[in-house]
Each structure stands twice: as structure tokens, then as C-alpha cells.
Image (tube, rainbow, N blue to C red; front, side, top):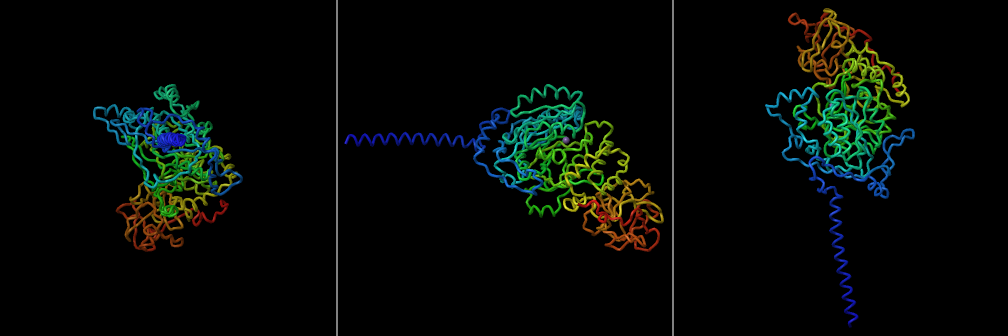
Length: 618
Ligand SMILES: [Mn+2]
């Protein structure tokens, strides 16, 4: 009896204690799993200046991932033994960075505009000159300012690979302001998943004068205390963006190099979309959407996800509207990565080994300019791809004028760089550049053999292939009959854009044979184009305007008859005619009469058509 009672009692005690322990376990577990879910708010409201979490030991992530590896898929065209993907045990498990909390009362929080009180306007204007942006406003804003989540709704639901490669951030600067540089650094630290952020490499390209004060030892001391390894490298003399970036890249220890400008702010979830594309195919070069930080107020303004990178005849990088063709390829999904013909060049991620395989940068280029187009053509033509990850947003302070000096003059340097890229990559389309920018013909390009050898070695495709497959909407026409001036038989004058913009009338003046504003292309699509604009008429009596080329025929279709030398507007049947006496610089549209005033000469190499030159094909 007693024995039985005792046994029941013991059982109860054991059961009860187990129950108590079980409950304790559940409580402890639920507490920690909250933190693991990334919603652990404990770190967030600690300190106003250091929002970032304490440094996490990366090895603790390493151990866990070793036994739960998912082999990433091998995508993209396999090329001569080059590893397309990453060994899974080199990838890191990650979770999204916690949201940067708003500091109430601080100016510019949530990316809002900062307005300077009228009594400080003189000071503001004085400081503006230093960097060509509102330094006073920037200095008032927290280095850890909060930003709103600017992503499309679909981006927030997106799933990214559980394992991603690490990245080193390389930031080159010359005479940068303290607050913009450190806000860039802090936005990287605060908004990158910590296990993926290997280090930040700052390259000081010989800052001078008042800038040397804060960018010297003060900077080194400051970054030594940051929760992420930050290295400061310095060029011996002013080297320019390209050589400074190469110096930074040389020290990169992460698997991916992410280049950023020195006055940026990374937003929530900016890094994951970039690294995800590269882990899927390491020959992908990925850019974020570059939002606008106002140079006047430092307001964060979201840029369109419906623009991509292009270029004009002058080889200026320009934003253009994404064509329907690319929207269709993405099945209308604006959160899907956008294949862009060119990149702006300031901000992008690239696999470190691929960066070198594809030829890093053209070291023969100086300071700045053209290197972004050079890399864009190279990546596409030599087997890679260039994308904008529309779920990744990074703000950049766009300035109206450059605060930097260019030794030797901006024009000479940019012409030199662009001429190199034209000579190496553009095949016969380089003539568009030289014709519209004749000054570049006399600028020495230097030795380009290393780059042409590279093009040969990588078995890169032709520029024609690029225009056909990657950028059919290009301002440089794929097929054209003629490139040169268009001369009237009677007046002996030439059509001339007079440097006017879209919507203005086309002009006419004496022929100077220098190209520039008097260069037109007559294309297979029957356009008469000058750079971005096409001759356009909407009625049978004109006027004849320059209008942004739309490539749809219509008001922009013209028929040149080699024999009677007329230029007939297809829609109206009217003929392009020399100016009336009322305005001797204004060509008009009239009923055709076969007189000399309606005869035009497209002289050199007429009927020379790009398509007939097959020597650039592979
Ligand atoms: Mn910039």
C-alpha cells in the first residue's frame, strides 16, 4: 500500500519537474527565436550614433551552414572551365539588417528635405562652393539618418538565396565632405546583412587643402572604431577614378566587389538583390537603381524603375525609357532584373575574379569619363551581362557642376577616354562619335594594343552584334545608308541642327565640312537623324522640326531619291526645300516641283551601308 502511494508520489514529482523544465525551455526558446527572426528590437534603440548591431562572429554562421548546403544551380552558358558559381561552403547564411530607427527631431529624418533658415543663407552659399552641394544641410543630418522603404511592394516579398557571397565595398573619393562620406559608410554598415559585408575600403585619391584635415588621421581614427573593418588607402598622387578603383580592388578580400560613390545612401534591402544575381551567374554585373539625393536639400527622391542606360553619338551616358521589348521579356514584372545596355558606372557589384577576367579597367584612361561605357560594351560583347536590380535602391547626390579639377582640362580627358573606347569597341560606328565630335580626332589615344588584344583573347562579339541583340533601340543606327552633311544643290548650304533641342526647327547654313551640327545619318528605317533627334514634319507645309527619334516611321520617314536628289516626306508627299527669303536659315516643306532648291546631295560614300561590311562579324 505504502509502497504504491510512494511510487505514485515519485511519479508526480518527476512529471511536475519535467513540466516546469519544459515550460522554462519553451520560454527561453521563444525569446531567442524572436531574435533569430531578425525582429529583436533590443539593439535598435541603444544609441543614437551607433545603430548597427555589435559585430557578429562570422564563424558562428559558417559552422551552421556547413551541414545544410543547397547546391546553387549552375546557370548561364558554361565557358572554358570558368566556374560559373560559388562553392557552397564559401557562402554565408544571412538575415536582413534591422531597420534604422527614426531619430525624432533631427533634420532630414526619413529622407526628408532640410531647409536652411534665411539667416544662414549666406553661410549656406559659402559652404555650397566647397563640394557643389549643400554642405550645411548635410552636416545637420545624422550620419545614421533613417530613410523610408522605397522599394516596390513586390520586392519586399521577394525570396533571396539563403546563402550568399561576401562583398567588399570600395569607395573612391577626392576632396569629399566628412558628413557625406561617413553617411555613405554608415548606410552601408546599417543596411547590409552583417555576414555578407566583408569590409569597406576607402580610397583617398590625394585629397588636398582643407579636405586633407578631416580625411587624414581624423578619418583613420574614426573608422578604426566602426563595427565593420574599414581600411583607408591613399594614392600617392592624383590618379583619377579608374586607377584609384584598381588600387581599392587589389585589396578586396570579399568574393564580390561593390563600387560605391562617396556621397551615397544605401536603403533597406539594397545589397541582397545585387549579390543574388551574381550568385546565380557570376558573369552578371549588377547595378542598383540610383535614386536622387537633392544637392540643395538632401531630400531622398526615388528614381524611376522604368529607365535604363544608353548613350548618344557623343558617347555621353544617358537614361532612356525602358522599351516594351524588355518589359515583355520580364513578363511585365517590374521587380525582375532589368537588362540594361549600359551603366552609369558609379555604383555596381561584380564578382572579384570576373572583374579581372573581363579586363578590369582600361588603365590608359585618365581621371574620369567613358570608363562606364567601356565596361558596359566589354561585359556584353565578351559574354557577360549587365543588369539593374530594380529592388535595390541607393541614393546619390547628383550635382549640377563638378567640384573637381581635371588636370589638362575636362574636354581633353573625356575626349581621350572616349576615343580609346571608340577605337577598341565601336568598330565602324566610331565614325558617329568622330563626326559629331570632330575635336576628338586630333586627341592622341595612346597605345590601345593591350585592349584590342584583350578583345581578341576573350573572343568578344562585334559592336554590330551588340546593336542587334542588346541595344536595337540605340541612337547609333544598326543600318544606315549615309553619314555626313546634307547639301542643297541650289543654295550650296547644309542642313544644320544649330545645336537646337527636340521640338525646335532644323536650320540651314553654309557648309563648314567639320561635322558636328551638320552631321546627319540617313538610316534604313528612312530616318534623317542627328544624335537623339530626327527630322520630323506633321503637315504638308512643314515646319521641319528636330524631334526625339521614335523609330516608328510616321512623321519621321523620308525617302531620298538618288537620281532626282529629292528628299520626300513619306506621309505627306511634300519635298524638303531650301529656305524662303523670309528666313534664309529655315528649310521648308513644299509640293514637289523638281527644281534645284529641292535637290540635295548626300555626298561621301552614299549607299555605303553598315550591313555590307561583314568583316566585323564573328
Ligand atoms: Mn558622385
